[in-house]
Length: 251
Image (cartoon, rainbow, N blue to C red; front, side, top):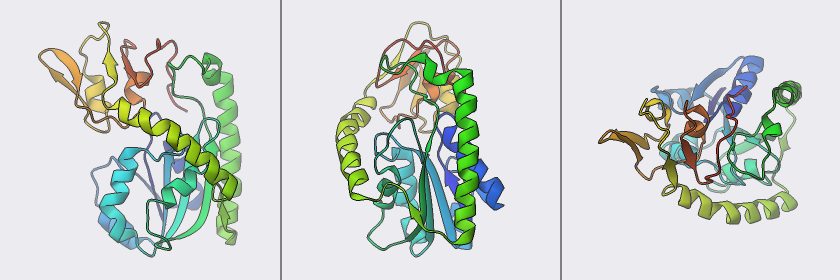
């Protein structure tokens, strides 16, 4: 067994590492420079963990799956997605990246995690208070304990695969699809930027570059919000352009 994850600001990484620790299996970020072909071929069961964006799997994870689809055929599949409030069919959305009956989904679960969209006015700063983050982390650990127990006992569970979840997922995907497209052309960098290049180093899509003594973007954003939450000057916004008041530093 092996688990692969993509994590913008640490939530999905936390869940993936919890799973790997409790199941005693390898854990790899899809951003790593490693032999994914060998890892996939050597495992009977593949787990994936990623943040869900209103029932949309992040583009970087979709691209990873596209590259490795043939290798994944016939594998047993475990799906974890991290969410803020509701994701509808967040786990089913990942399974839908493959042809029907291409893989056997043996477990799928959603994990409620802290908010990292820290410049969207509808979402208050209280969603990332230290007390709330600790409480969420504790509950996530307890839930993962149960999940791993279920998997070891052979229990099949598929969160997000029912008709109601599918309907909610379709609605959410319809809402967010334009936002994902918009984000490619909607990365803003204010005059507070000091060209420290941290964002250039940490961007998973290599979207941010220093050109002519100015940070610019290449229209290749996956909306992970890593740069928004890591910029020392709070000078970057993506998709939503409210002021970044309090950054989310992860679990």
